[in-house]
Length: 369
Image 1: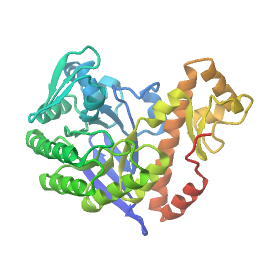
Image 2: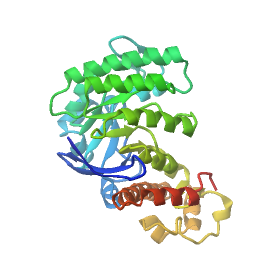
Image 3: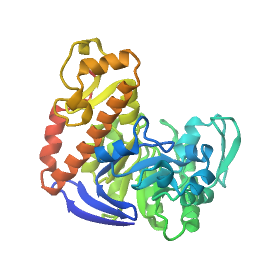
């Protein structure tokens, strides 16, 4: 993997760059739709490419349980198996183990957990998590980490961080030279732990650095402070990734702080449940006020949904529980995020980021309508 910085904003840390991988170049900043189980829900790979998606994320925990590492390995690797011939980043599944498994036992060597599917017992170690990601030919893999819920007491956060750093060392030792592995900065909402984690991972040395365990319920202000503290310590030439950061206003703030990679389930999850992201804010399409609204979902959007369907029709699809409704709204939401990040990149390259940042904050309504 090679990372090239093309431009840094004059009045902030925002930067535009390129990540060069065997399956293609990624223009940064980039938003990666989440394909947890090897599919971005309701979307085909063809539709993702037509929207302009450069890269997606998948989740090792889910893929390991179903269909299994061997099935994907024998199917030619993750990209071939899912027919998405662009880079795929896989998360180690630490967060999913903690949130989905009915029984988790964190040990020195790794994590014992029960499958949320059938209750069977499994064990993830930092070493086998890297091996599994290499076997399925992930383009970028993540270390096994301990992601705690919010809020959490300081001592518990410190204990979890110590293990996460130890596991990161083991992950680095086992990985092949060709495999791209990112370390994950944890430490809950404690700035001293976050700084400790960042310095420790930099000492170990990874191909990129992710900031995990944020945007889980803490205030946006605190999230930004933690992102800023970590980003300040990560050298300019390294890739910076904030995991799970998905609201447009949060992405914009984190770009300003020097972050390159983003992923979140919000565009797809909200699309399936009837919430659309538009140029003026979020709307709930099932609301009665849209019953006879014959305007496009977003008048400023050029996606297939907005160019062909009215809010009234989209509302009808959701009220009627037609599957086309979630598909069309998901299509629009992914398009909105991909083109928002492209616009952000364009403004960085043209020395217009600050103007765009200010105008977006003025017009975008973070409240639901």
